[in-house]
Length: 285
Image 1: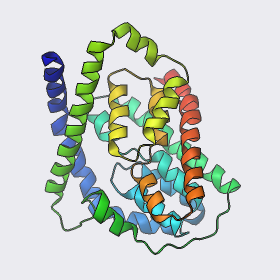
Image 2: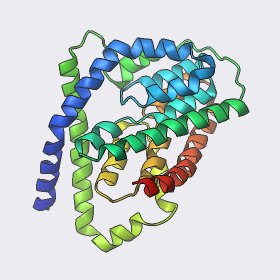
Image 3: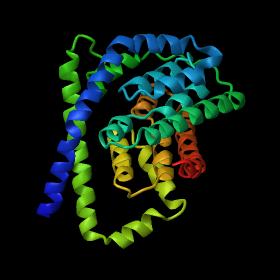
Image 4: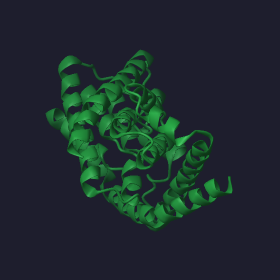
């Protein structure tokens, strides 16, 4: 027990400086580019899935939620919404960077999410035609009241990055400690056998990914970094993970059937695309 706690503290402290630097950079981007990103997405038209997937890769809070608001208002297409959701990396990128994974591996994961988001986005736009359904609820007020302080442009970015770092460090510590304790209860042989089960891992990972909270991406990425799951389950979970996007969608979009269909579709896409792209990724790594 004491060894598990000590290892969790040590592993978490090693990540903290790099996480802070990464979040400081992301805060700078968000405070200076967030409004421009939303305007470009609104004006994207046919290039919507491409622009949505590109901006979705940025690990910033609120953007997937903003996409849900724009979708509800009929400003962006269904395909663009999916492109943003699939590409959204939430806390994945800072954790992969702080874990010192090879740059080739990180870039490959980002590229797979980007290309999958673009492809699925255009495919859905070919199949789905949706009428505009204006909503009076502002996405920015939702973020300010219920999500995080990253929308407050007046806040010092150094303090904001520190708050974000502390929040994620606590999550990482809890997840790491839980994993360490699990290792004490489950033999390494059983854990390895479970991690190699075909399809089951992708199904479970995508289910975890649907949780509209950064803890899901933290858990999935930590499992991957610790070699408890492979790249296919990681991709399944992260493609199904839309950050707070689904939470905002259910709050602002009154069409509940549409929300459920989007959720189920996102889960299915996460599982299938994770299996397919994960197989290809294993061949390249």
